[in-house]
Image: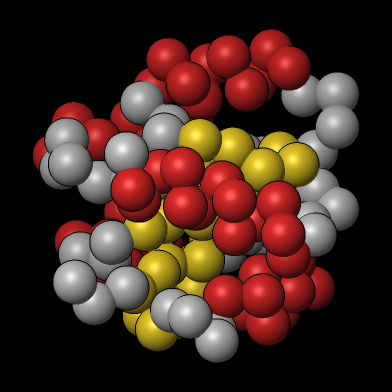
Length: 120
């Protein structure tokens, strides 16, 4: 299975950080800055994995996750959350998120979270 990933975060710094962590093992098929772009790019590329920030302008990660999951129940979405966003995290899990990582990202924890989701 080709391992390709869509990175969604309104912070360019965070997208770059995730790209650096992931590009050794994954093909990055696209990057989105908000939930609207995330859904469009998902439909276009059908990536194996989406790294989805929760708090974004226009449309947040929870809404985007809900929409992607409704159309693609088999999608794998890992939420990226900041410390202290427990309520949003619960909403994300309810929306269908498959896992989550906490900022600031460390490569081992990111890879562990992905491993858990993809091998499940």
